[in-house]
Image 1 (cartoon, rainbow, N blue to C red):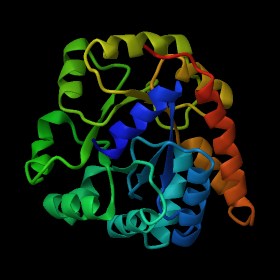
Image 2 (tube, one colour):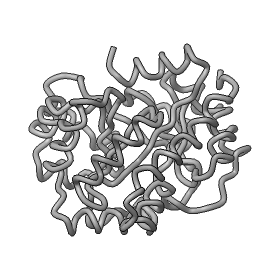
Image 3 (tube, rainbow, N blue to C red):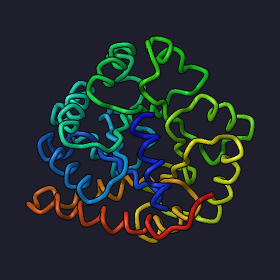
Length: 270
């Protein structure tokens, strides 16, 4: 059993849902990024999605685009991200997901990426722009299955496609709450609940919902129907607005505690 399975099993035993936090690795600097992540983990974050900075993050809204640009300006690469994971593994036990576009993995080398990611302590990878039909180019070079392949399911994904995508996933399913990019507003909890029920019929994997989730109220609403809630732009917005603030890590920890509290009061998703 890997860390992802273990974490969801633990949360189910507690009657909790997962708080999944996305951060662009190395924003605003590698050292401060590590400090922020540790503070967030200490405050109750359940799963970390560590984003690989990319020059053309087409699925991301302006807040994450700017965070990625800051990290790139600081020289952060996929190699840097894996080094950060190795450093975090010295004192962090929660699952860590590498969130990336395919180009950095392609340039790095699929087999080398797999081996280095596993060695560093990563538990899974989410490749935003790599559909199931083309995934064998990457996974066909993986010698084993120690790295979970997290899959995205969009609001526009049809029934037969949902089953295809879910059938090739492991770890958990990342359900996109709405069309658009990360950080956009207009979360419709009722519509999300309907889509979660559709996807549950196609997989037994945990379902985590992201895009447009930013407030404690958003988290509470999603946590009543899903197994986990993904927050990204809201965290990066705090970083962007407090880059010079010495208490940035404390602010991030306070935000995690506030959001995590809403996952402890949610009713079981199923």
